[in-house]
Image (tube, rainbow, N blue to C red; front, side, top):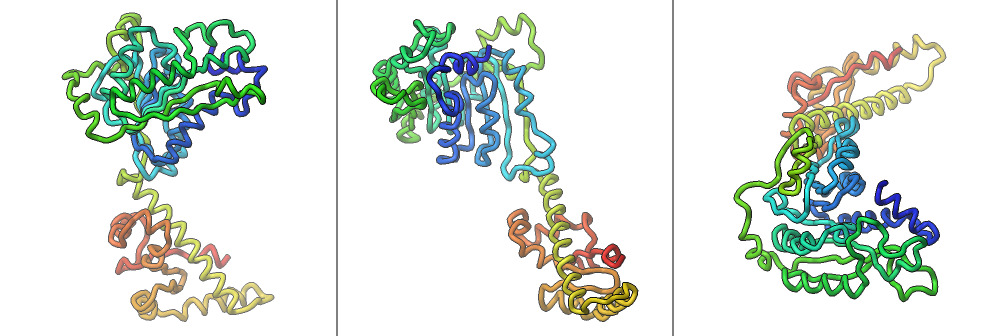
Length: 393
């Protein structure tokens, strides 16, 4: 059974709204929104729910998950794949998502370089030898700017029906607030971090003395130089192996290495082909709006006619009154759109002045480069040409 479902059953009589696991995920999400990390790793990612939430954070460019239970990740990892809408509306930043099957007690070069590492309800699942290695791997080797560690507060357990010793049969221990804080402060001191304590899951009124149901420690690296020496001892070979299928032999060997089981690269505007598609789509959309506005104005200037044929002839005469030479002059002297025959000319300079187009392209030269050959331009390349025929019917 999923550990979050187990937890909901245990906390059924003590109502948490939203559910406790959701509060933990939201805590991390709020932290990401505040500090804007580019690279985030979730140790003990389980069913990837937190990763699925974080993939929508526009600041994140690298997202990684590690868990010892490969079957759960394999079942849920499809949720981390790009959707059709991700190709229709690419992210502004690149995003790469990877999942690894294995223990958090092993070092690997691909674990380096993260700004934020989260360990939600993880440490209590580690046996004594793994727990001993854990601080060196996370604080010493990975050495991110921030680490978030959450773990059950055993002082809250008497309020949870059915809990006699631990909340989960797989838990090797559950700490009191004093035990967790002692462990956290000692490791923060050893590896050059500060730590602040908080939590989620408020106790019932009148029971505030037991503290939060989930206790949380937020570790912040004091300075970049502090952990430089701790990262000097790096493995020369990766212990993370890339495979596509699990078998019994590979599963057995997971105790000795960590296996990459999933990788997804999201389309982004950093890729020229996606940027071009986005720009062309935005240029056509903007030009159509400008065209419609111009034609509506020309129609209103000539009033309403009872005879549709008369209205069409008068409107056509109005459009033909703009000569090609005058049109070129308008484009050169200003940025106004104009009509000549059955064609509306919308200056690229006008389109570039729209914030969305401007932000996508950056420069007018880049705009011209991206739309050339993709949309119909005037002979001098200064304006987008759109037909008015469907407007006259």
